[in-house]
Amino acid sequence: MTAADASTVLLVDDNVSLLELLTNSLQAIGGFHVLSATDGAGGLELATTTHPDCIVIDVVMPGIDGFQLAHALRGDPETAEIPLVMLTALAQEENHMAGLFSGADRYLVKPVKIADLIAAIHAAIATSREEREKRLRRLAEEGEA
Amino acid sequence: MTDIIAQADRRDPALEKAQTGAMSSVTLAERAEYQTYERARQTRLLSAILPAGVLLTGFACLVATASLLVNPQQDSSVWINDALTFALAVSFALAWVALRRGRLATASTLTIWTGGGGVLLTVTVGAFSQGLTPLSLIQIASLVLAITLIGLLGDLRAILIGTAIINVVTVITLLYAPRPEALRPILDGQIALAISVTLTYQWAVAAVMIAIWFTYQQTLRALGVSYARAQRLDTLKAQFITHINHELRTPIMTLQGYIDYLRLGRARLPEQEVARSLERASQTADTLVALLTSVLDIRRIEADDTFAAEPVPVRVALDGAMALIDPRVSEGGMRDLQVTIPDELTAWGDLTRTQQILTNLLSNALKYSPPETPIEVSARLVQAPTVRQRLGRRRAEPARDQVEIVVRDHGQGIPPDQIPLLFNRFVRLPRDLASNVAGTGLGLYLCRVFAEGMGGAIHAESSGVSGEGTTFVLRLPAMEASA
Image: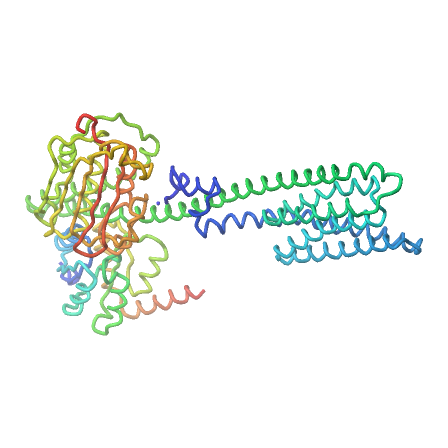
């Protein structure tokens, strides 16, 4: 088991069935330590208090949605560096761009295989701050172009 | 999505009213749509009329100028006619410029006054300067051309006012224009007849133009209403596809996730966890099937909505619905279900469809009310009003006994202004979109179609106040024997 396998992942999704499945899968197959929240406010609170190694966020949720949550996390120095993976059913291109602009390192459209989700979490954790800033600059330039 | 659209709906009162000329149900957007058609029609008409008018009057100007150059000693009436011709040419040219600049109203008004007024003045000046010769009498008959032009470009008011003005000018001309000595015996004896026949012809043409104007306006309204509603339907369909796409992805991922979970983790998962995961996967598959079934139901009932009516014991229908979705054992725990239905109460319709309606209503009550609140289902026989009672009431009031089934929850309720949207297909209310409540936006539309197909009706009542909940009232024809 590698060091990454022992990472803590915070899952934020309002779909209880999917949340339960992902929690079990990431623990049993990915070897992660998993925390979970069923809405944006709960996710923000857990992220601030536990500083997980990666956060997996659904987008469509009552109250604070995934985009707002990502903005809030990136705007708080305590959580700004935590890798973010968006896992959502919003499949349109504009949603994809909104997700990346809000600060997500990866934007995954459901359905996603468990193995692919685990790989995306590892990749997000491996993303450095410099790489993240470089990617955001590139996105901004493409948007202006 | 709506209503939206085979048109928009199979029976569309607004469209029917538009076709019969009633305007109250036509929305501003629909009115704007058919006004666009009308503007396009007038633009095309003027694009044909004005160049022809400019060319004709321009040519007449050239001839008049040449004539005056050759023989300047002309009668004053010739000078007046030539001046009129120049004025008409200039007026037509101005109308053409207005049309090219997009000033349709100005172009139309100028054309009506130039064409109608030009014909009128030419005929009048000719008759008063040269007398009522056979030629001038024929020209008076040609005044109907002015009425035709007004009918093509103007509205009802313009036709009526224009025809009245032409009537007055016709009468004045026939009565007071000088009569040649040779024709005086004939004209003096028949002038009253000439006036009445001429006015009759003018009003006959006006009546035809009014009829054309009315039918054309009705056609435009129907087209505008249909087009605007087709556009709304397209929008709703696009929203529906996006919505269904979104609704399908999460259960598909859950199902796929359980397969991955069991496949990748089978070596290390305890048997109990495997069994539980299989059960969860099965439930998710059921959710997917229900979602797809409701979408397919729409296509099926729109293709064939026929059924054989039969006695429907209300209690049996409710038991059938509860076999599919029992509010007493929902995800939130045991629900208090209060049922008040007389055992012998029997409706006249289709058992399966009645069960589907009740399933939908129970499912909604579960989804939109807290687990600790009760759900009430009651039913009763509603006696048909007597003939005396029906007198003075709405004609649509049912004449036979009815079974009334009421499903009430104590949830967040529905804002009253959103209630009319509830039974349209593909519509989801703002509260659905802002929450995690799953749905297709089809359930209540199916309820309405099923209820109406059985000769019944369904409506909802809610104050929109959280805790007061929503009451759905389903009415079906009662079986005659139970009345």
